[in-house]
Amino acid sequence: MHKYFTVNTNFYGKTSPDKLIKEFGSPLYVYNEAIFRERCREMANLIPIENFKSNFSIKANSNIELLKIAREEGLHADAMSPGEIFVLLKAGFQPEEIFYISNNVSEEEMKYAIDRGILVSVDSLSQLEMLGRINRGGDVAVRFNPGVGAGHHEKVVTAGKKTKFGVNLDLIDDVKRIIKKYDLKLVGINQHIGSLFMDASAFVESVKYILEVAKQFENLEFVDFGGGFGIPYRKQEGQPRLDLKELGNKLAEIITAWRKEYGKNVRIKIEPGRYIVAECGVLLGTVYAKKKNYGHTYIGTDLGFNVLMRPVMYDSHHDIEVYKNGKPSEGTETEVVDIVGNICESGDIMAKERELPVIDEGDIIGVMDAGAYGYSMASNYNNRLRPAEVLIQLDGTPRIIRRRDTLEDLIRNFEI
Image 1 (cartoon, rainbow, N blue to C red):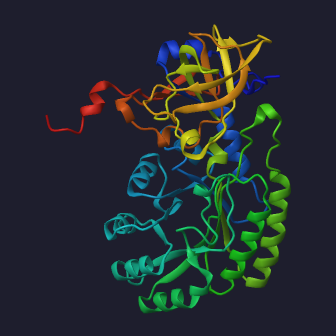
Image 2: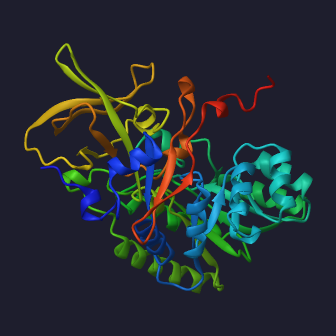
Image 3: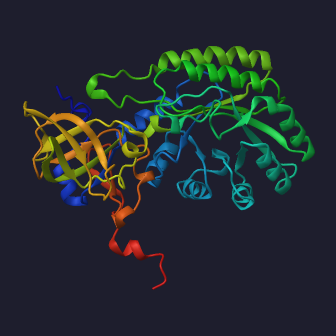
């Protein structure tokens, strides 16, 4: 009944969950390099056309060692803050390989990108005015709202009629006016409809819309379709993968026809987001308590929402694996349980009413598909320490790529 993703992929290589916990502590983020590289290559080669580039979204995972690998695999990157720009540059990305997609930012933030030769995208008329004032005659990109949104939760739908993102299509004349006013050069347009779609139809429709918008501007250098590519979070239930071949071929057909009409081999970009990094990450934690409260069985772990925010923020599902003595549980007896953490909040639930192999104190829990929006959203809430991050290298050996917080880190920024 319970299929083990980590067994099928030889996820832990030459080590095991118990050895990893013993060496690096619990909880622990573990990444598999082979899976990560495979996903990078799938996105780098998604659309079978010339002049196509896939970006890695650092907000999904900002570990500098993973960023280095993404660049090795030929990806560019998009950033949402000066901090993300700083880390990308440290990882080896060149300014021309970074796209700064701003949202309601200060002049200081814009200048940070501009001063480093990084292209800025704006998503409102007022921010376009701001950029014009501080960078007259410079290059700019504009993020449009195509009117089509998609995503697994209303909080991650980033286009359509109820979102803060993008310039409405009926404001194109105003965009042109401001660009002319400040002698700006519009080099690209972009969009992002939302996160975690498994049906690509909405994405394809948004591509058609944004390409129609592109026709209204001359001499564009690129069009960025955005991303939100989903992964099967419910693998244990047999959830199918997104059909990349079908999607890539469909996009190639649309783009080829559009380029012919536009009369220029405009670069096409995508921002796959979680797709590249989600499945290469597993979050390990330890069971410290088990109890029943009014008919509910609770498995108490060190996997609080300070370590993985997605379930409490989005009601997100993550498959759960159970390890006994470092090996996947082979027991046939199951029970329905809530996997809960150690945070003083009733919402601190990692998995609710989940049928799993019988779990005992001392067992290790593996939370699947935790590579995206896991560590990057982690916090020190309750003054808990953020975990270490470990990479299972291509040769199967583990290497620490970020150390675990120490208690001293909690007071590092205070003047004592």
